[in-house]
Image (tube, rainbow, N blue to C red; front, side, top):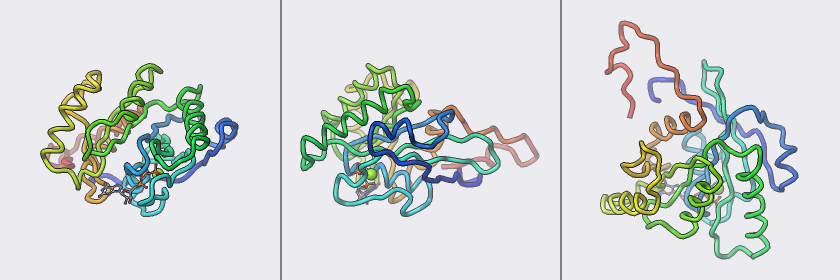
Length: 229
Ligand SMILES: Nc1nc2c(ncn2[C@@H]2O[C@H](COP(=O)(O)OP(=O)(O)OP(=O)(O)O)[C@@H](O)[C@H]2O)c(=O)[nH]1
Ligand SMILES: [Mg+2]
């Protein structure tokens, strides 16, 4: 990514209720890739890191910050292709009331199970912890709904090598049907150090069906000229 102009993210729509899902003024012809995961796992921070902005999506050390479905339009300078990254409210925040949890579940079901569902769900999990029940439930839900999904381990800056090795083994066991290219284990990402950012952009573009254009061959287009992390 470093050799190209940076993608631009812009908030295009916010949805709090099921009826708003069909009313929100976004281009439904464009693909959507949703970021899902437990409260506090780092979904909104990931979006801000991807967009190189501090407050594009609101973040907080207190779980339960994002309460709405937020559609961010992604554009690539010099390209026609665009898609939406969708920041979802997190699950598993124990201090939420049952009414709030039910409301969350209904909104998620309406979005992920609806006609205008995302093309792929990125399931963010905390790289410091073994697979949690609710994360595996979401994998199961996507699998049953025929929704392509992929895993990203967050807070990689706080993960030891031992954590990483353990997660790779555990997730391979918990989700043996991980995408072929992910068999080596989930991507590790940090919004603090930006580790994994370029790789995540590549995956998001593939997930959206808008891979980066191949640069034209030229005198300086050898392998060294296009290396990125
Ligand atoms: N060390 C570290 N902290 C992170 C990272 N990503 C997020 N955090 C912190 O984790 C907390 C939660 O981050 P958010 O991005 O708000 O999490 P979220 O998943 O959007 O949470 P909800 O909106 O409640 O679902 C904040 O205090 C962030 O600063 C990371 O990569 N490394
Ligand atoms: Mg959030």
